[in-house]
Image (tube, rainbow, N blue to C red):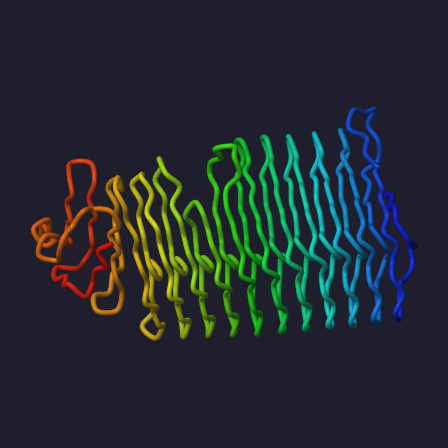
Length: 379
């Protein structure tokens, strides 16, 4: 597989800086050519080397398209440039690494703008690198992606983060037309003492299905700490699983109107000594299902103090893990004058309390049979 380097196929070291390159190696219409890896600066960046602020484009018709913003490896105190990267492929995978394949030492990723797309294969983007270790720090990246009949996978920072790596504050949006879309605010896995960034995640404009949003990672373990993320479209505020001593961030999860949303403030599983954050879950007009913390909470795990927000029309919503006295339900615009007025709408059932506003709008609070004035905010 041929490599194209913007500056050198060797090293950029010491205090040297890569040039600001504009390179386009696209072959979008054929005939079929080789799969090309386009690297903005060099094979490796060492010492206090800095990558240039490059504009790199790689669109291929019948071959894979790969872009690496700065170097295949960045270590020591190297820093990535603020790159604009666009890769796409028709029949083969397209992959973008905002800075490097491996980011370690005290290396820092740049603030990159990334667009990736594929029509009949998987499109993947890493805001910074595939792996981040040691004290590496991710940049504040803007990532958009699309896929047609393949899958779309977007990572705000890396696939795996270990050591004391720190995620950047990323904005990530994307959708696949008929494949699966997975968006991770930071990484697939976060462990050791990793910290996630404060990320913004959302679906693209394509009306995709299915889409899964992870505010930080799929799995957080060790002493990993999640960022304070904003998700639009349901999903996991932090990760599917928080275990060991992992700590969730204080996240905001917003439903998309007109469709059912499944929302986890922290995770599906909160295990071991993991701790949930203080999250805000906001209902839409569809039928939403909410867990402020997790569907499964281990006996030693700690839950957060979450806020559940509703406004009319809200559909038929469910709160699955409400903790009276610790959490609150905010009702906006329901024209309720007092808690006594609200209490007339309570219907006790064997499974919990149903708060009924009309035939199309209600909130079911699972497993709770006593709700007091302190459990609500009327605005």
